[in-house]
Image 1 (cartoon, rainbow, N blue to C red):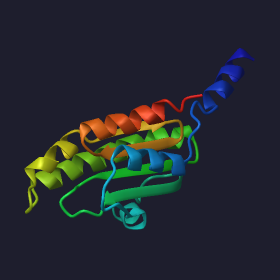
Image 2 (image 1 turned 90 degrees about the horizontal axis):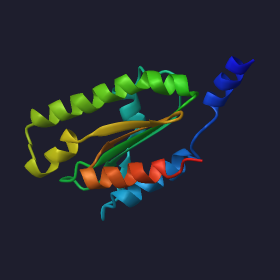
Image 3 (image 1 turned 180 degrees about the vertical axis):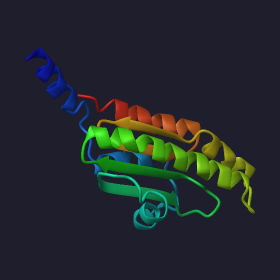
Image 4 (image 1 turned 30 degrees about the vertical axis):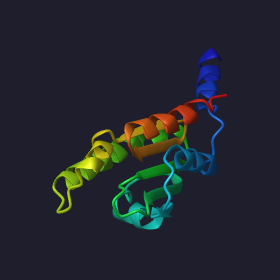
Length: 148
């Protein structure tokens, strides 16, 4: 009985989050005069087609051509599916950094964003960030503060 209770409790959400609030947190943490473009459909097909159990996905890139800000939000059917997706998303961040390093246009000022790219899981949400360190920290701190 105790085992069943502990398993049930671990499935309860620790955070009060939804995909819209996460998007707002990132847009506020890394504002851009040019705004962000929703590239979710293309990126989901091109880079994240192997993720299982995705309920919703939103991926944004900065509209300013010299600003490489990018963040992605994935909501999964459950925590187990979110955990399994972490490796695939980490691989995407690593590949993005590698492609940037080998790109024709190498903007040295934007490189730290790729170098410090990170991903975190919050229950059944997995969120990644290709932003400068301060903006990433601000957004992830905001997400952590939404803990129940």
